Image 1 (cartoon, rainbow, N blue to C red):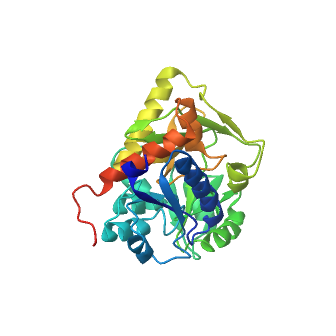
Image 2 (image 1 turned 120 degrees about the vertical axis):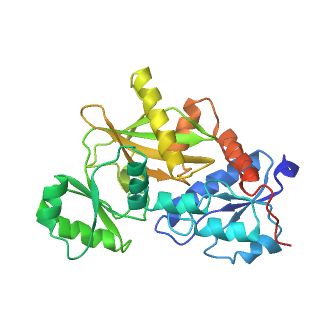
Image 3 (image 1 turned 45 degrees about the vertical axis):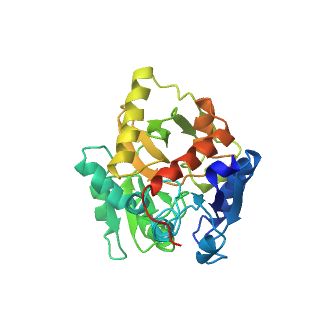
Length: 312
């Protein structure tokens, strides 16, 4: 098995606000690969220069960096330059998926459904924003993940506080119409969708605490949707993934409104791989163990730079 993959760097940690989750995800991936005989090693780009990847003769990279510098095309570009095959989406697709506004623009051009939204600034007229989009609203940093910096806003005069929180994490902040309904996530693996997961939380929305801390968050798989509805939504997830040029593996988050209509929220190109994470959960529902999932993801890295020269 080790000879099949060569020496593998599990990229974890990094410099984003999601560093803690990335370390947990990466540690679990590292353990799974090691159990399967892969010559895998932890590599934290926040603590080591990338030139060490060449100096130590790593042959593949398993990216488990979440958020900025890991999911936004930055590390992907560096690995392309170094000639090291890596897991997940390429430079452009990673950057587009990280940018929630540009993701939505592409989906709209492709005729895919997504909630009404607009960019905010310190000069925005909060009452006009609320009038245009309707209440309640979600206020989000455009380039963050794990629900960091997000707020649910029920009144126009609360928008200023929500903006102030979000802008701490990103200079670009957006407001999005809140869809009150069923929250779903669709994992993508090798061009196919895994079973949908329905998310239920007692919290205001599926925030950081609900994702990584709370024990009362419910993950329902099978989702309970009618078979035809499940097929249609899984096809929509794949279309959203492909519209951004994504490849390999990832996760698409969306909502169903009270009429059963889907609304795409975002794509995660290096989703969580912790014991609370959704892609491993969907894989289990499809009969795929955590270790097998990690190997399937690692297999895809061999195709990323096929035919490209490696730096000597």
